[in-house]
Amino acid sequence: MISFRTMKIEQFEDDVYYRAACSCGNSEHDVTIEFEKDEDGDINLFFHKKVCYTSRWTANNIFSDFWLRLKGALKLLFTGYIELEESFMLEKGEHIDSFIKALEEGREELK
Image 1 (cartoon, rainbow, N blue to C red):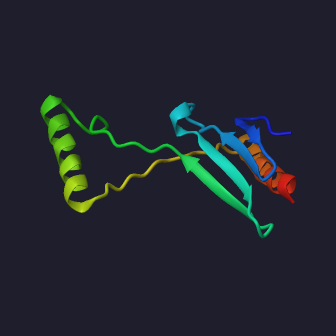
Image 2 (cartoon, rainbow, N blue to C red; image 1 turned 45 degrees about the vertical axis):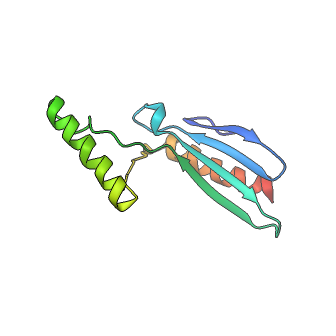
């Protein structure tokens, strides 16, 4: 049974979903793990995570906030993309063990 910061959130005939919480405690950093069985019987593993862009992480005042927003908007307008990176942390011990158990259990449920 999964317990420490990892839980099963949904199960269907060909899909199983788990949620793993980030060690920092912020629910916006959580990862959804999806196991999917395709038509060939192969099991696919997907990780879903919300990622956002904000100018407030590095802005010191209202002017630098506006400048960072403008730079981001112009980059998106002229290049068509903005690169984002988000971190997800598993603490040692029980947190990692429950994450591994979720991976093993999800695979076994669809076999």
